[in-house]
Image (cartoon, rainbow, N blue to C red; front, side, top):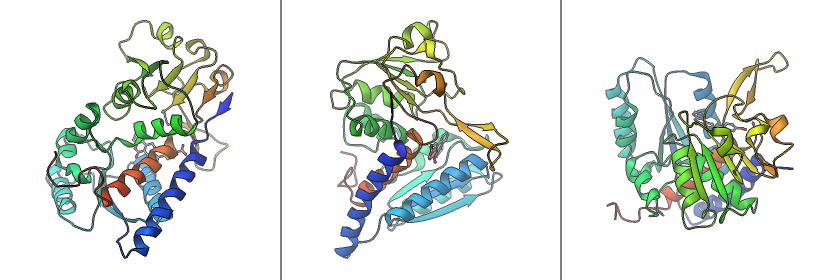
Length: 298
Ligand code: BQF
C-alpha cells in the first residue's frame, strides 16, 4: 500500500507557482490577487480561509479577506461581491461555504463574475467544465485529478465509483473521471444516500472516491483488494490527545481500508492540501486571463 502524500504534492505545485509569480514580477507584472469573503465565524470555515491566505502568502500572491457578520444581509454580501467584481486589481473571488441560512447560496454563486470565479461554482464554469470547454474547475475535483496524475495512477478503462453527488465534489469529479482525457476515461458510477446496494457497487471499484460527508462510512468490506481510495471527507473528532481538542478523520476507516488499498489518501494531508493548491492554480490562471481571454463567454 502506498500513501498518496497530498501535502508533498501540493508543496511541489506551490513551488512551481512561486517560480511563475517570480517571473511575472520580473517582467514588471502585478502579483495575482485572491479575495476571500467569510460570512460569520464558523471555526472550520475560519481555518479554511486562513489556510488559503497562508498559501497565497507562501507563493507570493496578494490576498485580502472580507469578514461579514452572520447577521449581515444577503444584500450586504451581494454588494461586497459586486465591489470585488469591479476591482481591476482583484483576480479571484471566493465566498467561503456554507453560508448562514438566510442567504441563498445559489444566488451568491451566480453573483461572482465567471472570470473571477476561481472556485468554479458559477453555472457558467460548471457548465463549461461539463462540456469540456476551458473553465475554472472547482478546487477539490481538480485537486483529486492532479493527485491521480502526479501519482501516475492509470484511470483509463478503470471502474471508478464516486460516493457522493454534491455540486462541489461528487458531481464534478464524476464528470471529470468519465471525460475523454488523461486522467479520465474511467467507467464511472455515482452512489448517494438513496443507493441501495452500496457495498456491492463500491467493492467493484478500481478507483473509489468518497465524498459523502459521513465520518468513517467506508469500511474494508466495501473496498476491493488493490483499489485506489481517495478520501475527501474531513471531520473533527473530539480528542484529548490533541491540543486543539480534536483530530481530523475522513469518510474512510483508514486503518482497515489501507490494508486492502494499493493507494490511499490520508486525512489530514491527502485531498485537503490539494484543494488549496488547485485554488492557487485557478487564481494564477485568472491573473493571466487564461480561461477567458476576452470578456465575453465564448
Ligand atoms: C489537510 C472544506 C468541507 C466544507 C467546506 C488542508 C484544508 C483541509 C485539510 C482546507 C475544505 C476542506 C475547505 C487539509 C478547504 C479543504 O491538511 O488535510 C487544507 O483548508 N480545505 C474549504 O474551504 O471549505 C470546505 C471542507
